[in-house]
Length: 139
Length: 139
Length: 139
Image 1: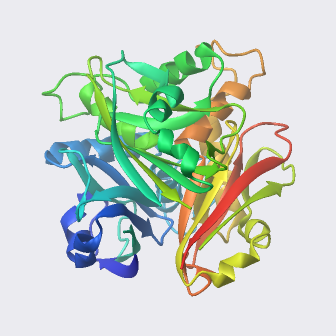
Image 2: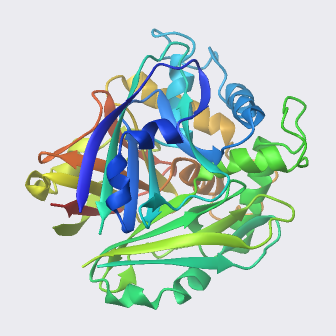
């Protein structure tokens, strides 16, 4: 059983955003997968996806605090500066977290841990809407 | 062909631990996959999985040395501090390495490179046992 | 439908290299996948794969600039130094970017975003040829 669809996420400010419910509301076909996997893929190079703590908003703020220190806007050694001080850091942060997630599905539900949720990592100041390809497969 | 099972890893101290054999001893069904993939997924937000060098213990110690410097315990800019100085760094380190691995399977065996092994990255001082979902699929 | 093959990439200098076309020229079977996924897996621990911007060479130079600062060659706290100053950083950089990529396939083509391309991240000064396992699956 294969099901593939595009999901568009509304624009969000720079930062880390919990989007599990928004994504999976768009793929009710998940209920039909008894054993399988759900693949989420973001079709961009300046926003990314990760899994992390789904409860405290301060965790998501601390993610932003750390990433902004680790990959500073406008660092003097960047050559690729034409698209703004937040552009090259956005590319690097995207590759550090990754553009795809593969999540096990069991009994028609995501087999996430209790505290796991999907983060949209928006690394641009004005990234606009973001497009995902969601692929469900299994039996 | 689909096979999905939970594998529990015994508690380990903070650090990077080679767990390839412990995980795959629990899924003898791997032998039945001629062409396919093995997906490992950790159901936590303060421990993670990666692939790296399976021989020298000093490589795993150096991983810890680097990650502990890159994401310092108790950094002053973290807000999420209630669960201890090692908690917020554990979340960030987990997203840097990732919660899932997808490994090709060929002829009933993992198609890993000679030097590749699976690391459990335990980022908490006392993380306890860790739960994985292992999904084998293929033909 | 399953198709699995080894693809060897010619030696490249240390740095980030766009290899999308070189890899997929070796798997014309992609055209036969209507809905599915393409998995790329590098069988090494000192080179890795990521997706990022496929246009400007300065983006790839800036990746190298950032990674070389974040994980410095010959850092004094590394124990694993026998294989050279670039060896331990190569292991860490590999785990930061990851050894595998899973890309959706639709209508016989990769469903990449307009700006996305596959990078070979060569972290050694003389890494030699690199071996990938490419697995296509779908229907």
